[in-house]
Length: 126
Image (cartoon, rainbow, N blue to C red; front, side):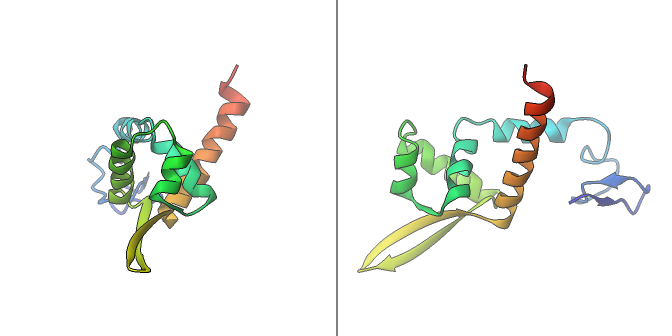
């Protein structure tokens, strides 16, 4: 969420703002980091599936057939660590199941990505 910086009256990200930090200056390091994260091979594909529905691990793997279970697990853990996806564990008939769904931050990311998609379609794609 963007907000007014208390130090130099500029609009900034508000994340531990000190105005000398890269998130508030005019370099693009933060944007480059963001693009590097979301451009990982399975990142957007997992988010796309979870945007449609909450899924168990096997169901998610079924949607992403080419993704190995190891890579799916690593990517899900990365998304969980970043608070984009949450894992819900529950017991059913003495068997432990897991399901995955987007957090509010994940849904906010999806909304922003759709805006980027609309912009790209309108202005950047030949």
